[in-house]
Length: 72
Image (cartoon, rainbow, N blue to C red; front, side):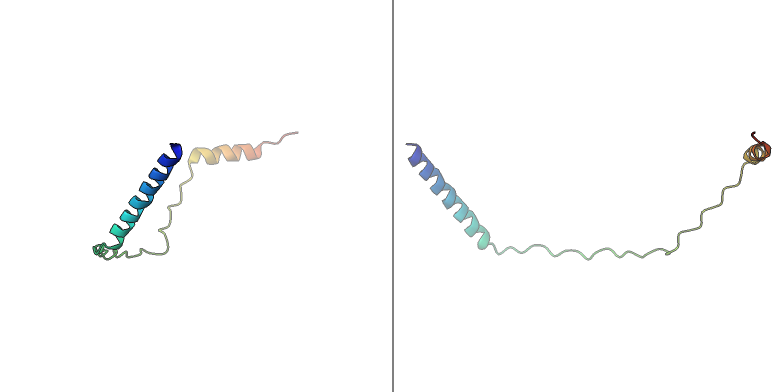
């Protein structure tokens, strides 16, 4: 009984796949044309210069004091 059921479902699967393939083969519908891609205008090749950070006065004072120190 299992063999009959296996053969039946295999035949049913093969017939359904054949019917699906033939339905797709006879389809005359064409896909819609793709729209034109958007135009991209490139910007300047060089990025704008970054502003130089202004040194903080407290850090300059701290550095000068540390450079005067000597360790023995």
